Length: 397
Image 1: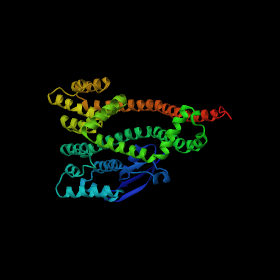
Image 2: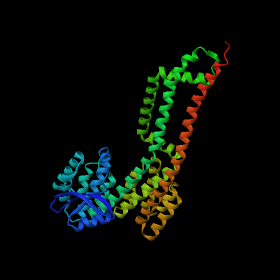
Image 3: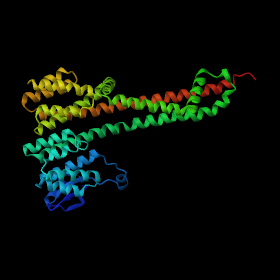
Image 4: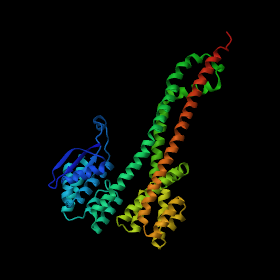
């Protein structure tokens, strides 16, 4: 039996918190509902120390907001009542103020989607359009549930990529610091001893000592050039042309991983939008926004043009020569059977799984490669110093 902590509300808005034992999360939710309360959040209890150091992001707040509002609407509460409850129980002061602003706009006569649209930094265009489609079809609770599933899957994918890159990043940082300590602290200690040797030093030792002296004396110049280069690169990438060239370079460097990632993002977004009742052309426009690589995103315009001409999306997608053949075949089958939305979700699930395997393989290659490179660099430094020390014995007395 697993133990879950929960936050729930009664129909009069009273917040109830506690723990419950159940076989799994689904059983726990059903048991809570059977007691007459509305479960808002259900999680496995975490260690209290770890919980203190957990950082909450705005995306996590949106995910929580969507899940809780979906649960309240599904239980039959009116939208304004649900928002009022969420504004009272939300732990984030910033999110609390956003919910109160949305509630104020609704009470003044705005629709929910229009109220969300006033906060573009919090709720992206895809979120607003899905809510608008739910309002138009009278199935807002259903759409919010799908939106919650979409946000959870997207977060899970990003977390997987982030966690996969933690170890290689630590390797780069520790390896780089080790090399810097050797060059700026250890080598200068030997430079005094080697100073009298002059031309007797091996060539590689002379090069190392020169690099060491430059870093020690002009470290501020190196730091200044590094920061200036980083700022210059950021300013170039911030332009439309620069971002396009940078994305084109990344596509050449890690094309397989990027294409699988963008395929999963595009198909899940488009499938979720279509399933929520958003028209195809509008859904394509929204799906284009979630593609981070501008080279691929720019090609989606051709797909939208083809769809506008009545060609569907499978043929235009095949014409841009970006998406994998398996994805194109599945999308074509979805169009032919009238189940495009379901098939797009299946494509997304397939490529999210494939992408996880690809990332795992990439990291399994990257880690030993980085260790080898760091080992070669540090080994070169150590061998160069040993050769210089051994050369002392060759000097005439």
